[in-house]
Image: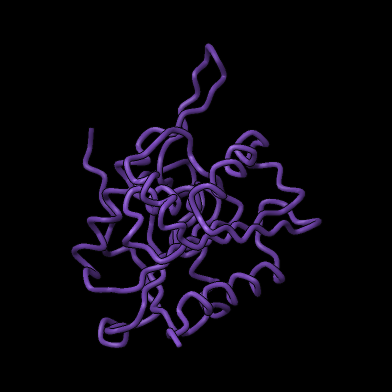
Length: 217
């Protein structure tokens, strides 16, 4: 199997290497079949405190890139998500070589990228300060870091549209059961919104991130 690796040259930064020294870091993880330029368009609407890095997923898909493939069992109809752990390790390796001293580090993902953000938190619960989960979901199964994550109860913002027909209902239900036991959850549901991000949600996200990066009193 080819090595899974984040492309350093594809990362979009909101600040130069000099300007991001000593600042917190916010990683953006785009959705399935998209690219690093997608969520980077949100940067002007997010707080100025963190430096922002928008990563490109490592797997080429039909029209863009994916964090992990979706594998369908044709006998049962079940969908598995293979490779998510390998991609999480690749992102952690990228952090080690590009921003090893960045702290605190937050994660913001959309759809599959949000699932990847939660996967990273499960993989290294003490390394990340929070997750913003936009129209995403938690992957099934158990991880080595799950118990530690439940002890730390990191802040997680989970925003989704009431009219979202992309994420299956069973994945939403699974996430509703899993997140409260493993995080300090701020769950928001936006009426009339599908698989997207509304202006109201973006304002809520900005306030959530600003509070996470606020200096301790």
